[in-house]
Length: 330
Image (cartoon, one colour):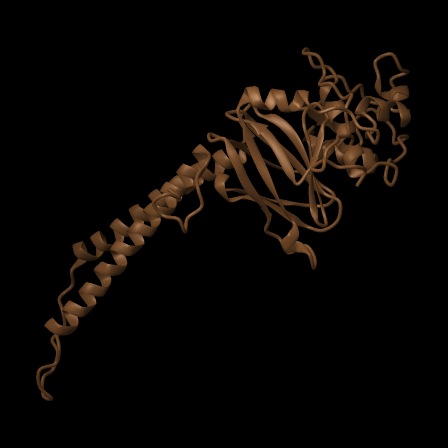
């Protein structure tokens, strides 16, 4: 698309092509009807112009079927466009089951990324070509917005909660990343890139990364440091719900409500344990508010998600980086 129309951003995902097709279809229909209406207005203005000062117009007889037709055709077109747009919207909002989770923490004015194996980057995110990537995002301060034009994906990044976004790049290369929410005086400098690499190159790139001295504690270490294992493990006195395999399930609470256990619920339970009490348990858990950074929260939640998985848990032996593009304790 960009080669033929350089003013339009390039397309690097299937979703981008679908959005472009919808956009240009809507643009084409709008142009056709606009031109048709303009021509008809001009034609009728000439055809039925007043020819003398004494001429009096004649009332037109009703044309019921004509009115039905010119109402039904636009309605059918609009409903078709709505259905097409709704299909794309739901597709864009529902990550496929094979998506691999990467974590994003926004901060004035940088993007901090964490790979599944715990490696971290700042402002540059390297991903393998053809892999479905799910981004779990939060902010340390203001509201930001993650936008990659070539992927046609955009999602607000909010403090105090997690939002998600997914994409599957079909083209290798470097694609610009922007913050599209005014987040402060240096908002325009909050830029980055998504580097899509061939799987073999990506594995080689990962293999060249080594652990740095300023690592973030792993989720398992934080779980032990906060003494979560004294109540939440099967070998404990079971003063709190056992967390093995709890992620993705529906939990029933003391007030009778039910909630799907996801990242936002885990975050709320860590920072505000009394917000939703699981049925049958008392509010004895202390809050971790002020004791964990956003990155440590992500590490802890990643570990909680891995509990009870049949496959080996994701290695969380890394949490630091090296090189100019990676974080050194920010």
